[in-house]
Length: 427
Image 1 (cartoon, rainbow, N blue to C red):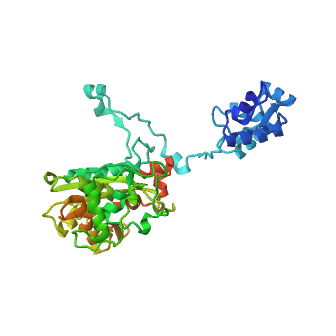
Image 2 (cartoon, one colour; image 1 turned 60 degrees about the vertical axis):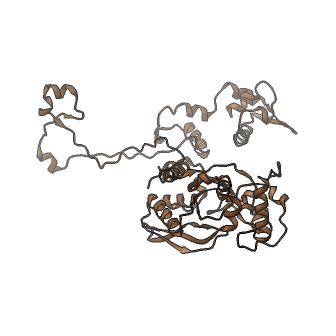
Image 3 (cartoon, helix red, strand yellow; image 1 turned 180 degrees about the horizontal axis):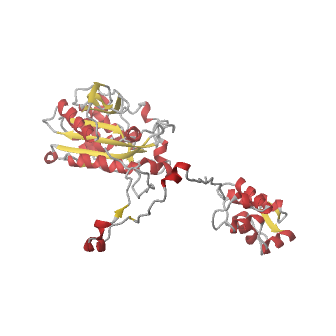
């Protein structure tokens, strides 16, 4: 209210000229109008002016201001004068200005039995051992205070990274220690890399605007090398030399040029495979990266999310190697029990779903999918059909599992109180 009064002291003002938020301004207007201190001169635009009473209030403080000035330290409610009590109740009705704290006064007195014990000689207790006490030997004759190491102490919330980035760094470190090379790439990709290179049909529902974010500007990008595009085209149309029949339609390069926000980290695997040379094989690669989908935001879904992706490219790897990599990874995450069950994923064959055993809940939890890339994916990108082990999992669900929270939105809400409670990532 004081800011509003001072702002219009030298003339009429509009809301944009007053340094208050919308909520603060609305509250101040209501209170000052009750005091008869301001008037609204015009509504288009809204304009405020001081009344004669307002000019008086410029020179003196309200009861509430006077009361606030007395709160340099806590005051006893019982000792408030009537006008102070009124000011206090007014301020209490408004949020985050004053608060009431209850304090209990405990009194103790000796019982008859205690009086019979007689006087006790007071002994000075030492709370800290000093260098002088050590050199003089006086500590030998001193009595020390007892310390209760189980008694509660004030909580200290030290600075730390956001729990999401703690988890990302932890997982990155696991794959790097296992000898993997990190894959990175742009958030915006052509549909060619996001869909076509992964043998996703151009009329597949996942390529609809209800599932994917398409860019308005620039709407399209450039396709990669002509030879690569031609191999992908033939694979879609008739299967090329992969042993597949393909999708049996005429592949449209214009559809493949459309820019999208990448919908999965598998796009990074596709680009990595296309860039490999014979000397790069065998190779192991991973990514922990952000993706986007046109999802309805709820407790378990978000339009922005992270995935953990990995591929191993080698002529000598088998399906058992895939299971071994995953067991080792989940073991490093703290899960001793891992099991696999058959599954279907569009890019891989054979495919499995990995599950880990949650000791606290005594139940098995799905954590991610894996498999061996299909020839329709590998051969057009790599130029040869050799085993490529692949896996992927969502990151946020794992964090929810670790922290015991039931709503994905809590991770991104930036509620400082909850972020402090989340602590640090450890396994």
